[in-house]
Image (tube, rainbow, N blue to C red; front, side, top):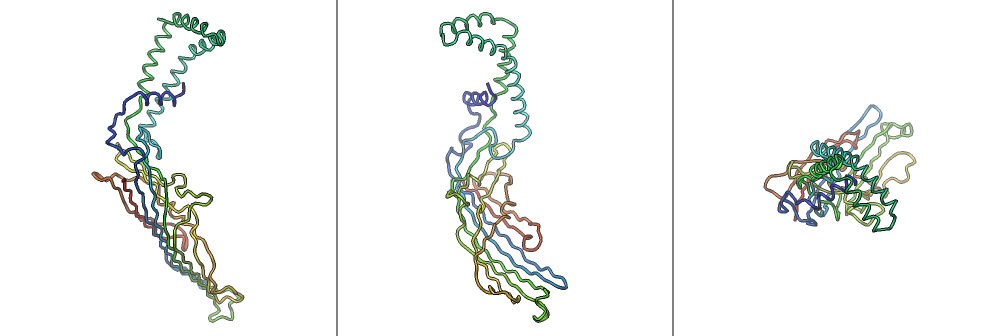
Length: 317
């Protein structure tokens, strides 16, 4: 019998340790919402060229979550040291049980080979085999190991409850301005022997669903998991999983630039959201609602480096 099967049977037979009142009912709903604001501004210049930028991206996301049944083991986060030690102990005990049962299993397989589909033969040989084993030292050791295994395989107290995404929606706004000055040789006839280029990007609307699927839940990407023992909440925030449409207008006096001033379509990936989660926070005592704010410095050169402000809230219904 596998370790998974033994644990499953023990979990089905043993009473729950924690009261159901300590957790939400399976299927209960909640909302995990978040507001992202990414800003970046600055200027880089040398004696030939310069680059100035101002970036503001804001995204609001809301995900409806459904509660899983309470569990003794975490589903969304890594087990702690105590849980890992218990798993190792269970594995070792299962291997010990399997080793001691090997002769008995071999005897049963031989019995079935002799009797085939003859039920009377199977019954007769099983009784004979049981009588032969009764009172023997290996049998007593196997019974002892079985009792030890039963004790070790007892599941821990209900401790965790995961809430996973069943729907996702959001909105966004994009506002960018970048200015470039270059001393390209083609610009020798321009004032100061410099050419100028300005890029404006803007956009707003509903966050598109993930590419290739109509289900905005995106396989339960957003989720939380409470730990009633550690008094913590694991949080994986909802985020845009597709490009955000925008409009781009480029204005330049670069010689030969025929598209200057004409609006065109563009797309933006809000990749910085991936740097905001997952994370774990302490549960707020005496409150079903949990919330927080984080400010992250995003490393990178030019517009890729800036500040991300994240405000989130989880509200069980």
